[in-house]
Image 1: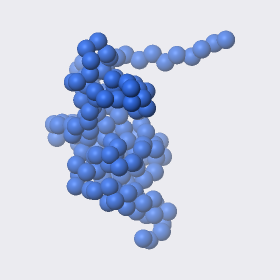
Image 2: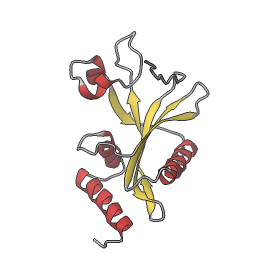
Image 3: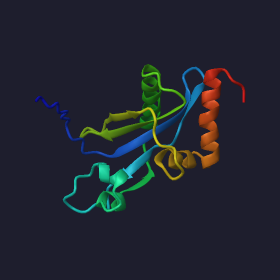
Image 4: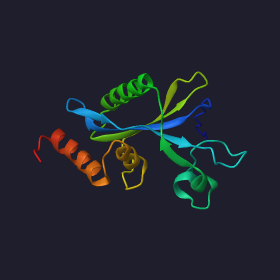
Length: 156
């Protein structure tokens, strides 16, 4: 029985995520990026987001990883926002999405994941980024709903 495996180069740089709310033609709000902080992770554990970081409260990844607002140079931030908007449109995403990146040794970001349906629970990555943009949770949810209504041609 054949087993397929995807092998990728490990990217040693910072890992961050960019959130977008909106739609092509109607405009996007690019939320302030979030960086994964691996600094408190036990020595010897690889600095990656594992299944344990999302679903296993007994995992060191669950308790030792944290999120912070990414401090990126303006030109890098602008490029990431434009790249995310382009991918959003090409993949026909709708209303909101999250894009995960990691920097290579050369400092250039590489796309890890284009997430069409990221969680939007209060305290999650998307709501943290919205908060850094000055939006409380209810406002973020309203923005997503308004994007969907606008896309569907329904006035709120």
